[in-house]
Length: 441
Image (cartoon, rainbow, N blue to C red; front, top):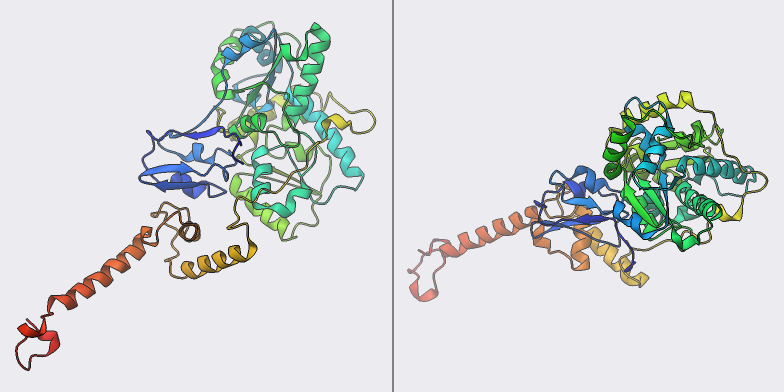
């Protein structure tokens, strides 16, 4: 995990040492030490929750800029379907797609088109009955990374199909090579992302060794340029090739409903996602065939790199659907191997206490023993998200028992009692005859 790329970073100069972020992190990857927050990199899944809740804007996402377009002879934009929900009164997706060609791109390929391909492939794979139930969507990289660090037993349940953005990148590059005659490395593929987790995915992909995407731009960075252009656009090019199913992926439930099955579950928001995964791990959702999970509230429209309220954006997409056909993309025959994972999802034991099982058990017992001494308030004053996390830090040697303000008060009170006893103490030569020991003044 040492070479694992992270798109979520911390600006220490802005951090005030509050504990908003440590309470929200789903993998307890943040601690506050010496008045500043710090991120434990091997635990971070780049979900962006810390960015969302930080009042000081000390957490931020790293993404690329339009300057990167200069590196390629042919540039293709891959807009996420969540982008369409950012614009008020949008009645034609072609306006957004045409705007990309006016800010420096040579072509546009919709991620929603690839989403329809993935939906079709998922239906075909599930119809074989060979996938472990319930099947968990692999579309949200934050959820997939959460599973491999916190829920190792569920790795086998994750759908082994590439995310729509990766499928879109492959298709876009293939079409560009055919259209232009250029070499594959002369073509730049740029994804317009709603969240930092997908920025991380491009640098360290899941299910494949290398992503076909070259750079990732943020919706929040692109939005002002696109909005300014479509405001005065009357002649958009007919570029859209997706329908209701593909665009529906932008909101929670869109992927699951596209499977045309009744036994599905869709949850959004990282806390709800964790609760569902715990239910699956406890085998309480055996009647469900497919589970769609999105780390962001509302789905991808709720990503921290978007500009609009997720529920307003979702409502706009619902209105936009009436102008679209159901679907424009299908897979003929069997599922192509190109959309399948080539690497399995493997458990990464970043939460283990020790490589030696016997040592790990001793540390676990020590944590449980220390936890019984804690107040159990999970106040965060120690810089850890919970009393249990603090006890783990103490046993790992990352914190001191006295860092707990309540334990410190106990030690101070004990010291005060000892000082009170010492206050009246006199050495034997200075004691008065027959004076009780407690009155030696």
